[in-house]
Amino acid sequence: MIKLGHPRTALFQLLATAVVVAATLVAATLSSVPVAADPPTTCFRKVFQTKMVKAACTGTAAKPGTQLDAKAAMRKFVADHKIAQCAECHADLAPKYPLKDTALKHYKDLGGE
Image (cartoon, rainbow, N blue to C red):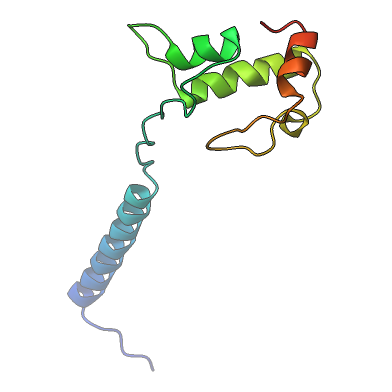
């Protein structure tokens, strides 16, 4: 015959288990809270050959431009002109995005200023 423990012991074990489960859920929730992203960086370039990138990088007094703004402007241009990939004009990507020798001509041929 199996001897059961005292009813208070069983209640204590149940309560302890509930506390452990609750603590685990709280820890899991806190560890999944997103951390604030790094603030957007300013553009690497300081001399601009196109109006579009200059406008995106310099922005306005109320909202200065960032590297993300320039990237968004270029992505829109790429999509609008059905350019297959960034590597058609850029020799490398972040953080400097150096241009290939033919990039500016290609941009202007597509109507960019």
